[in-house]
Image 1 (cartoon, rainbow, N blue to C red):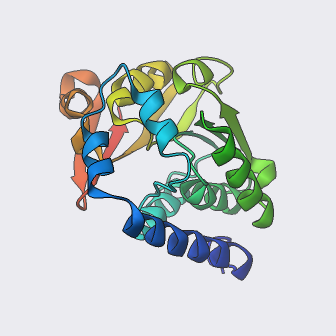
Image 2: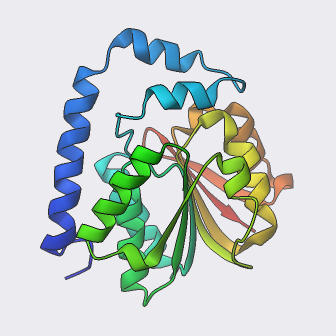
Length: 214
């Protein structure tokens, strides 16, 4: 049995996905349209309005994250956009089963960080995770490991390329980058799909871009 499938962790994940499904059903279409109109200048305000929304990866993407992090034997993971910690639980479970490591997350909404830390503590995975509070353009610009094995981009889509720039010099050869809903970030897609940029990249499923650093 893996850490991911142990009842302690799997029950938390099931509960969080159920809560996320219920929250999605309550979210208004008008609010979603307002989100698509957000630009680089108001992303903090927009995501502050979503402080009570889980904004999770899909169930399939969660399992994909675990499998990929295990496959590359990741020890150093960076996550942009922690929210309530659903993806964080999957990645931390992979670290546990890889023998340990460190996941650095970034989330600017304090109430979400509190919830995420509670979920990680309940799953017995807190010792593997450092969630940094604040704008990721600042929190992910310092104190990073020399070699990053795995990156999840699942925060403000308009920042994907800028976050990648912060991390790029530390990505080891063969490092994987998973970008959720990357179709909302055309500049990011153009960058990782260009061989001149140093990546191999493919769309995966309906809403994920999977990239590998040369």
